[in-house]
Length: 279
Image (cartoon, rainbow, N blue to C red):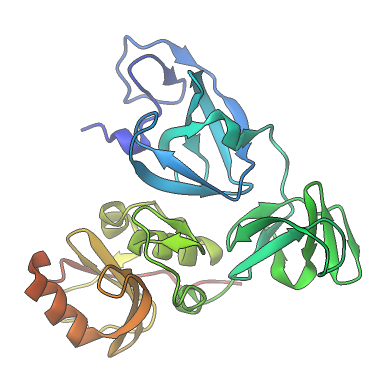
């Protein structure tokens, strides 16, 4: 069955590389583009609900532009949706990614100068030079200690998730300004070089290795419920973005399992182990 979230086709056109799209749709090659705003909602339809979010510097393929909205497919996970045309810019090869929880782009290489943009963990930037403690980008100056060269990954998804502690819960959120359960997992995995889809139902079948019932959880394991996912910190603690706390928070594992069952969302449906990260 075609999953509209990762099928680069709508009612009018389909990307050339979309074999599962209806055969009667005109095929287009698509145009490379990138996100030029700090955070952009990826919508299910023009002016529709948010499915996920894309971050500054994320690359994508523009499939169709119509009535102020662009139908796109994100490079990082294949997710498709609609963005305002104003969120897009021409491609620009990134050199670094934001590895601090959040940062600013300043007008000058001076922390007292005006900040032009606030960027989330995971944003991608192009650095042309370094001036003291700041790196120069086409959009402003960014603290050198807040960025990491592309291709240099972190080693521990659980430690990455902890960078988001206290971040407000936001359905479909993918940034340090608001994030949901699957957004937190994706941020943690991508920062460690682990390919990761955008939604928890996809993650429950595609991430890592499925473990037998009763396997003792260890740091870095994923536990899934219907519509929810959490990351194991230790044998008795989870970290997850959740509505109960309306934030990213630690929670005792047994208490979380009991609470989620009590609120009507059922038992744990899957236990998966992520691959070992090589750095």
